Length: 245
Ligand SMILES: [Zn+2]
Image: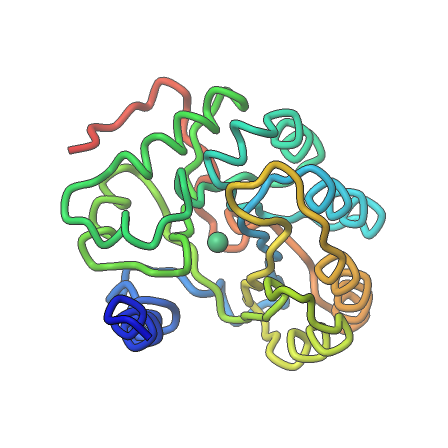
């Protein structure tokens, strides 16, 4: 193992522990909605991709529940028509940065990863996203401050699954764990796609939806988008351009 790999293998889990939910962000993250009513939100990161995102939109339509999609700017550039479809079918689009880089949020100065993704989404939808999820969940205090200055609610999660793994895990296991962790106000973190590729083949998330949605609905839960769960705006108008300094 070379030095770079050694630093990475030690540093990565330590930084993930420090910077991701539930400890990351030093109070600037929102992890869940009110615990007083049985409303929950499904979120999907890393798309849009041809194939995987389209199949997920199909199944959410069949199940009649909305999702909140944290999209990567470069994926939006590759698949603008899937982003349009996501919006048209009643789902909410948030930002997941331009290139899904770990390093950008660590930088003291860089705001391009936020502004470029916002511009890309706004070009397609005609409105600016106001919800942001940092890639890898890594949120430094200074990244949190600039996101708030740029007008974002920073959305974490309180139900995390391993649906992103390759090869894909068993959807029965993913669903069982998600249901066990769900509470009133929960925000579920799932992955519809893969960052920086146009097309992706994935079935675990779709199959997990088929298992968890009917079971939670039977348990009295209602699925809403993140903005409704948290009572915050999903978007800002196109002309609401904020200084990126
Ligand atoms: Zn991601």
